[in-house]
Image 1: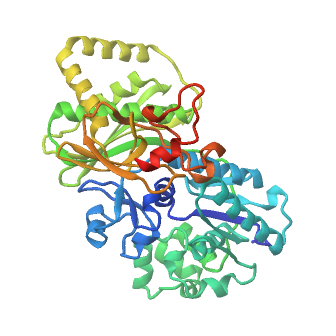
Image 2 (image 1 turned 180 degrees about the horizontal axis):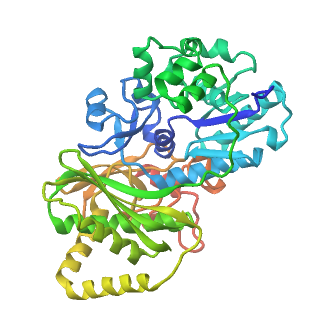
Length: 480
């Protein structure tokens, strides 16, 4: 344990939902739920306005809709979330070389390694300045916990939510932890909590009083010993700057069970391509290809194939994934598919296997002109499935986002992060003037010229020509 609270834990507040509210002025102060929007979807993040109605992360979206029917239910936009995350992580790296990201919106920072004096006053000043910098850069808020150990810093940031800062002074750990539920401690999930409950252990204080020997008897040596130390407030885990991923994978849950074998195969190929994109973005390769198949009855199967060497060749991974799929019976219906790569490395090993896979793909495409055309046509239709929350651009009205769609129509709200709440218009889903767009920078990240009420992407009909005055463009948009 450190004698000063020099470990900082940052947790962005309702990150996905808050980013959507910052990007969409009409949703600010209103309940927003981000996650799967279909009948089988799951809530990823709920805004604090939605949480008032009992909506929580990991809750089925159908249940959330019953609890809060008037919320905005949006599909996630990971491109935007990664952009914001990169900006936040850059601020953290300016504080210390030791930054341990846990997810897009959460990280530990060793302030002492960054030269911050080991004094409560000094670390508090750094924490408050970090919160101000995050708001200025992204327009979002984050909660900060400061303590002498990682476990305690995380508990402090949770207590600080939303938009606060809590410092746990060294020496006060046991008094603070004692009355908390045992689920507060890292590594205590539902199964462990139930085992402890049966033994009459409900709080952190009761866990400490039970003693190490009793916890080892209940949970095993490794888990019991570690849990006893944490119940006493002891956590000597260092902040680790590099967290090496063990695998990279993608998966999709389908609104309706897939029974057509050709459709299942095309989805696996699509997932394999997405997996390769993530693999290459991380600068990695892998030698074990894994597929995951969840059937209509929720039974889940995994199949894996280890290649001769690590690769990021899309043809090799696609061929391996399809070959694995052939060993699985999908006739009863498939509700979820996934493709992943493990055994990661920082290099690729090219061999004849890659060449062979490429040749097989070419031969199959040549033999199955009809089948290939059907897959391409299905792929072309996907962008026209306008999920709520997606960014769009209209040739006449400019940038906006999908508010809803159905019966061949799509409703768009035209607004930007730095504009007033925008107007709503409805179009045919096949309107040639409407296309998918890219996320616009949030309020704090917008260029100075874009901080006005003018959208970043002007409608073609309102874009000024050479030498024209641009002063009345914003007024014209407002009138429309």
